[in-house]
Image (cartoon, rainbow, N blue to C red; front, side, top):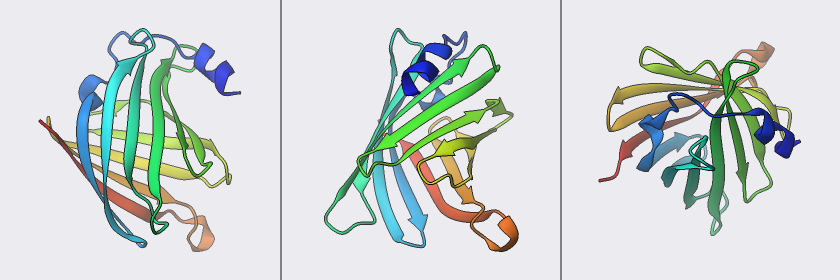
Length: 154
């Protein structure tokens, strides 16, 4: 399935290069606070943005590692995001892209079929905020799962 999605997603005229570079992201969640490092670059013929993530996990003594690819699907006219991690987790999300200073990802599928949404706000060229929500709340109402503040590393 992943290979079929990778084949369906093609080059972007203007890829979201805002995210390219190294970022330090401070995460606050019910599980506590931690800092992750994102190393993001154009990849695979500059058709994808590849994000490599590392940092402490919620599991004591175990490091979190994740790989994310962001590209544009010409068929759906939406951005696609594929995320996998060293805990066996995976998510496939889609987005319409930037709307002013905001970017919203909506999960299409995940390993636990948990619906999620990620709202990103561009604060400045070197700072963005991300709020991740899930419908785990009563009545399926979205609740905040984590907040992340990211600053570009120079």
